[in-house]
Image (cartoon, rainbow, N blue to C red; front, side):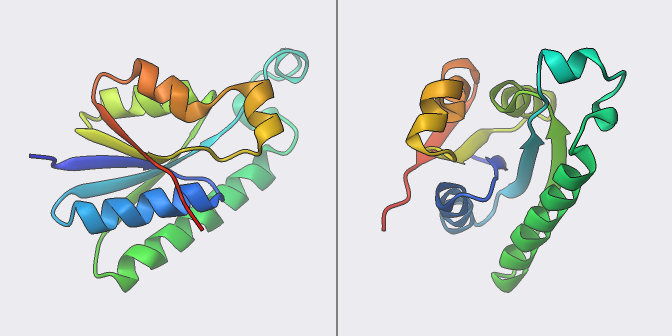
Length: 144
């Protein structure tokens, strides 16, 4: 029995579809929505002594909270509760680490959150999660 679901969220339609899928298909499971703020590696990281000292971090945190507030409103409209959290780092790694550390039973995520060029440059977060997660991962593909 699936008791806990992790839904990584961003501002993409695929992410919204994954969240809706989790709400519909797992009515009795506890759902956590996770947003990962990507931290740059290399140049900027070398000049910062903490995550919060990076350029744009405050703006990214504000946007993450606004996104998660919207997720909470969607859950409220469906008479569901959702926990929300923000992590920083590499999205694929942070999603898997969070799921392991919090004994998540299943991850439900969108097929992709970037455009084609972004996926080619950065790789697919969903692919990284599917490859590395020790629990079941459901990948939802939003169709129009």
